[in-house]
Length: 392
Image (cartoon, rainbow, N blue to C red; front, side, top):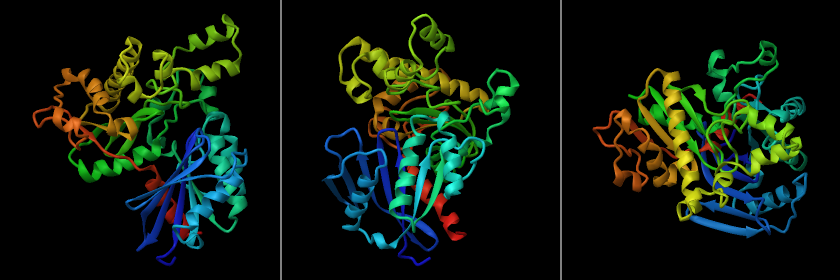
């Protein structure tokens, strides 16, 4: 492929999409721009960053189920800054790959339908990724497309870790722990190998509106706080994390709530928002004086610290903790709340380094290190797409 070839990545969340623009040169990918659309905003706007410059452009297109108008206008706006004719492929983040997709794959009609068949396992995220895949396929049929899966990185976990204590037949049907945020953890694993080569047992905390933790041993996933769905693990912005299944039975049978009502409660009205009754954003809660706001943050920190302890058991020890994603990278108070619960491990926080979002946020005397590393899911999508394009 010529060195001028470009590659786009689409990282679709439940309510946003992040778009990466990469140039392919010398057999590698290098980011030259990034964009974002927040589907909750009105009117829609495309925010584009190209080097030091940022452009925020309102979209004329209206949001539709097929996304055709939005994607078409986005390509038009990109063409004002990049040679869109040089784009050779689009790589997509797909949340759930099940047991079938344990590595990135080329997208054709058969694989798209197989991904669609996994929608019941990720009803909030899978349809969104499919909308982008199908829109690009319809509007730019000449582009090669690839999919990178959040679950794939965790396929290295042993069966004992992935198993629920349910009848074996259900496990064999696919009801098991899969783990998510795998693209983020794959990037962090690479950074750990590069920057912390002397640390073998790591717990990485991907803390954003969706949040999870992953146990890494020599860069390989051994455990994850998220399990069968993205509802599991630690509390999140609007999701509860770990929840006694008896609560769901109670809501269905005693409270007479419908399945749709319970689903809405679990995905949109729980977590930090549910506990605080105020807001789902940790930044807002940190500025709020109400005791419910602080209780939500304290619960968040306690559950994170508890998961770090549990994952230390899976790893058989702990060398370091890595914080990443929006909250993990940029909110020192949240990190301090978490690490305070781990003082008994001999962990000593360097308050100045933590306040500055430094790389190392523990003192040299600390028995366990804590670090802040920025993640880059789009970089992983682009890197995983490249070898597929070579064999296209």
